[in-house]
Length: 579
Image 1: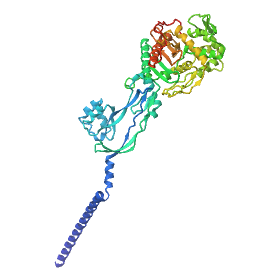
Image 2 (image 1 turned 120 degrees about the horizontal axis):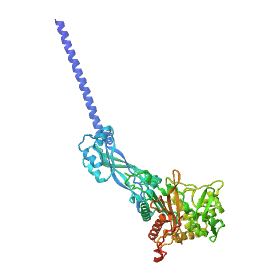
Image 3 (image 1 turned 90 degrees about the horizontal axis):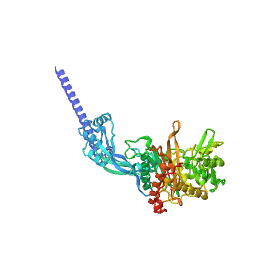
Image 4 (image 1 turned 90 degrees about the vertical axis):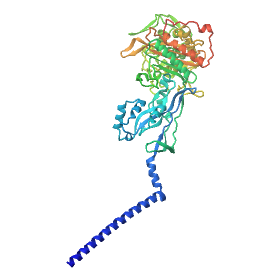
């Protein structure tokens, strides 16, 4: 019994010792851990406080982009044609938003969204941290949304492109998409120049993602560079108004007008019908996007007769005193027949142009040969790019067969069997107007005198201008007289080409001319597609537009009037002989 008691006492002592050891061990470990934690706190807050600062920064400091301000596009006088204005974009962090939040009803109303669709999007993208709710809003609307103080709904500043002249300059300036990347016109052609370069900055945000403070600038935004176009907005408005009026009055399919400065090659106005409003593209249709003055080709018809006549005078085979026998008023080439409006008999070279005689100019072409005419066409810029740098430019067709058939020579002389755009036609007339110099065409303002190339003698160009004067004074272009200024030009009426060839009842009415004729300042080409009001000749439809536009344009440019009041107001009915 005594031994048993001793064993029990020893076991109790051993158990008590083990318990004390365990307690001491746990207490020691606890004290070590507490000590380590205390030391770490002291270390982080006193000795090495950069760690906590860095960790805090990771959670509150963000790098954000700074949008670059897109460059301004202006006309030659500094009038804005395209500007970027600051707007607000509303975005959301779906992971922070309760899709059942009642205030989302008002958010949807202010943003013009369907409430059910908004809530569905928030549920669908609940795992994401960023979605757009509505981009590029007026700042006041954005303020109303943010005033609701809904967690997860934020805003950021962006820029929106605005076009003060709207549809008047739409085909020249073009437009950008929602990210301010050029899509059409100058905006597309010079997108890199206008875009600039985005910047970056560090900002401090609170736990709701709101920017509290801008900390440092990493890289400043580089704004886009501006463009100063050659367009004169006053003339652009004038041209657009008159072209729109004639297209409406004649129920035409469309129209184009191009105006050039004859001494610099600058495009002063370029308009089309129909057009579109780049500020509101909700009703935009693709067929209205084309700048038809550059992208659309057509046969220039009788407007090429003065150029063919220039080739004849340049050859030395003809003089202004030469005559052509046009009897009996038509010519046959196998199964093809070309006709004049009537039998003019023996007429002068001036009358060939003034009366727009197909027979007369075709006889000249037969004697000259097709190569001589084609070669001058090419020197004046036809059948080749204008070099203007506009997207979608159509070059046109200038035939060069190995051997010319007589009918091909004849049709080439009066503008059939070839194609041009309105800008190329204006360039050809610019050479006739300025004494034979071909200047590079430009949609950018030209500072100083450009370097041109002589492609026609001054004497020949002067003789052609005198013939063009006769067209307006006594020929097919009587309605082209621009008020108090003398003018010269040429009418053209060509059949439009359809799916099955030439359309018998569809025409393009054209007038190409210059004023003042004694010292030309401006060249203008007017082309109206498919007029339906009964009148369709170039002298009836296009020439009056030329007269109104040129008269007002010359006054705006402070060109001194040449004609007396009585002569300027003298009625000038259209000739029955139309080119």
